Every structure is written in structure tokens, then in C-alpha cells.
Image (cartoon, rainbow, N blue to C red; front, side, top):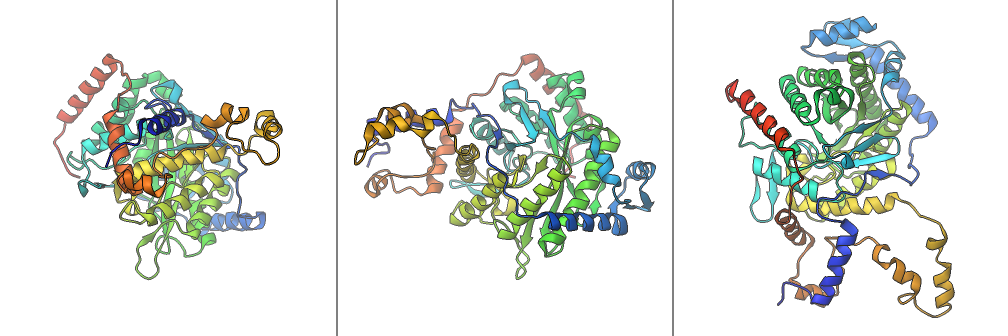
Length: 512
């Protein structure tokens, strides 16, 4: 049994894959959708949800815990502050949000990798936050800094990934209070795509900004967005001191915050879509508006991470119809505020890169494209409800992202695509394989999956009877073997290394 297809077959396939994907590490541009947005929430419904959110804000309010400075900011802005509970007059937050940009550029170390966040654009970023990693060879285990670097390299190598992301996995072999240095450095060193900063403590946010200033220059960072970061509400209706501290650092430095309620409906919000959307809107408006009080005009993104739970077991569920409805409705609420929107990804509760994971992730990533999402975190690698970053799932998901790029283009109609010359050449009863039009266009005519097996049964047997996960296992290994990193100015590299060494030496290791 041969490990390779016949040279002629493989040669054609290899050339086709290269044409589809481009050179290693060469990303295609972020998506500018040509498809219309699919809208499931009518005008009457959205007005009722907005009115309900206004009542939540005015009658119930939100808590901003252990941050007297934020409470003073809200009081000075005209909110009703009672202890840590803040209530907002109707229309107050919408007025504050008028200074927020509807679209902004996140600059990459390589300007060719810059992304536009907002408008009709969609940016894919990898999985974020799992403490565990898994692959078919070593199984499930705690993540390490080596795993972290590997996922950064895979995101860099994937032509369909526009962004390097943030905590692609937790490197638990490093101290909690110092691992952010190595994570941010890995994004800068091993990729030249845009990246995210640390939010686990205000001082770690400050370190991230300092490293960005070394990389981009202090004045450039002050005037431009070079990092985007995830600020989660502690739903229901709470922002904690950690998230508030990070938000203040980044907003003050003109860096983008994704203010994102983290909700499992039925536990952290009502069981209904409309009730949950009301809560999402109230939480997101409050957090987004706070960035504008700190620095008017600072980039901010309306976020929504919303799924549901099993009412039988209490376990999180993903890829559900309710999840797609929540994503779609939240996207419309963000557009009505004229804010960029973050949601979606390739979610699954499955423990393996199997049929369940493919089905649930496909359900979510398609809704992500159709609903008008601008920034899609968790687009590749997510497994086990976000507890695990999977090497195989990463490349399987990335293949789906390539399909989304093609779908987003819609149907192009011009003289070439109408193909009248081909129809005239072939006529009734012929075939198009040898037509001049086919010869001109066959190389780019259809998307070619890097994971799917479309050969005959006999050829599949001869190639080793590999399922999708095992084909993906070979794919990510091949990608890492062929990785060649982007150039980084040695002076910047030295300055980053010196900064990290000095900062790490200034305080003891801690796992808090």
C-alpha cells in the first residue's frame, strides 16, 4: 500500500491546492460580504426588545463591582449610582455611544495583514481560552507554551485565518502572573497578523500595551488600534473588577475592546430568545458606553457569546437553532447602534473532532456569515464547549472557513461568468470538459477542500482508509513542518526580550 497517490494525480492536486491557498502563511484578505444579511428579527420585535433593555437599564440596572473609579465616571455622566448598582436613564447610553466608530482598522505588524472591523466585513480569529489541548497522538492534556506557539503558527499558516487571536490555549506550564508576556510575544514573534492583548489583570493589560508600543511605536499606538481584546460581562448584569480594570487600560490607550456578555441561556439569562437578547443589549450597551466615557472615539465592538444549556443535565449546548437565532438577533441590535459586532465561530460540545463537532460547528459558522458578524472569535480549533483546543479540529474548521470565503462572494454575473461562448461551443448533447471557457477557468472554478476525500472507494482504501480527523492529523503536522516565520526587526525583538526579562524579574512567580 502506497502512502502517496500516483505522481500525476498528486501533482495536479498539489498544484490546485497551491492555487487555492497561496504560499504558506499568505492569508487571503478579510471577507467583504457580497451576500445580503439574513435577518430573522422583524421591526416590531426589535423595538420591543430595545424597550425591554431600556427597562432593564433604568429599573434593574447593572453592578460594577469593586471599582470606585468606574462608579464615579457613571455618576459624573448622569447615571443613578446606588452602592455598586448603576441605573441608566432611557436614551443615555445610546447618546454616549454616538462617539464610537462604526468601523475601524486593526493594524498588523505587517500592514498587508491589516483588517477592517465593522461595516460589511468579517474577520476570522482562532479559538480563545481553553486550558486543555488535544490531538490524536497524545490525547487530551493541559496546554503548554509549545502548544500555544504551535497554534499561533497554524493560524499564521492558514490562508483563511485573518487574525492571530489571543489565548489560543492556556500555557499552564508558565506562572499565571507571567504567562501573558510569553503569549503576547508569541503572537508578535511567530506571526505578523493582528493579535489580542491580555485581560486577566489591569497590570497585564498595561504590559500588553507596553509590548505593543515597543513593536509599533508609542505615538502610532496612541493614534491607531493595534490590539483588540475580549471584555466579558459577568452575566447576569455584572461587570467585575478584573474586566473593568482591563477595559480602562485599553480604552485609555485607544485600543479596541470587545464588550461581550458571556451567556448560557437558561442559567445566566432567561430561557427565551427575546428575554436573553434584551439582557445582551443592556449589558453590551453599558460596557461599550463606558469605553466612550473613558476616551471618546476609542474603538469598541458590541459582542455576544450566547448559547443554551440542556435543561435535563445543565450542560452547555452548541450548534442549536436557538443559538443561531440569538446570534442573528444580537447582530441586528448591534447594527442599529452603528457598532461593529462580534459573535459566532465554530462551536461544539463534542469531545472529539467527529460528526457531532462538524455538524454543530457548521451550523454556527454558517449563521456567523449570514447574520452579519464582523469579528468571529473561536473560528477554528474549538472543542468540548471551549475547554479544549484541538489540532485536528483547527485544520478541519479552517477548511470550512475557506468555504465561507467563497460563499461570501455571492454570484458574480458578467460576460465571463455567463459563459455564452462555452454554451455556443458545446451546443446540445456535448460536454464542457474540453471547452475553451472551461480551460480558462477550471483552476479556480470550484473550492477544493484540503481535508475532504472525494476519491473513489478503491482509491480511499489504497490511501489508507483515513477518516477526516486522521487526514487533519497529517495536515497540521505538515503545516508545522513547513512553517517559516515572518521577519521581525532584531532591534524590536531584543527590546521585547529585555522588557519581558526586566518585568518578570521585578515580582515573584504566582499562580494567581
